[in-house]
Image (cartoon, rainbow, N blue to C red; front, side, top):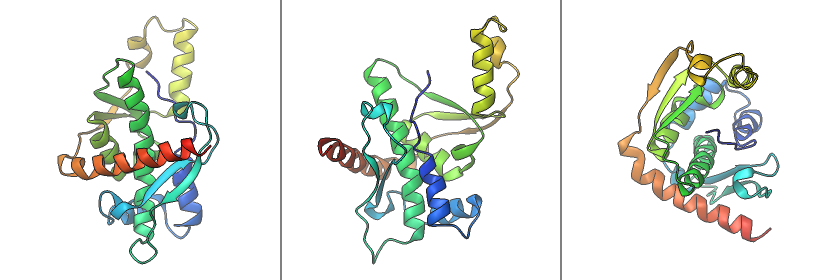
Length: 197
């Protein structure tokens, strides 16, 4: 099953260009990891790239919510961005669960947001799922899927059999409670944003 969250990950790119322009992505990830889980109440809605399928094609935009100009630092903002993106994934997975699906493994290419150890652990914990990372990316996955659809491969097993698994990430039990509280607060922000459209 493919989860479509149109452009939430561009929020991390925006943060790099506008908040951490003097840092590499690995440095951003290291700084973000110094902020506490749940970011002391700072939330990010990462929907600044147009209408989202998981929000019934509504455009709620991007938003920093609950910012405290005395308490919150650049590290908080960077972690809140990654948590907000992970929350959007969880939101989509909750929709899948309401449709009767029970995803317990997330398979992805070791690229883009999945290069961030913080993001990977946050997502695995939020979703209660193991993440398996493979030596591939979205473009190669699309090509394999197209070849499968065109009949070049006889099965999905054949299409993806040569992929090398690079890493496995398990949920971080010590983050679960704090992330669940933050996710509940984030969902309320999303609900309020949708109500105000």
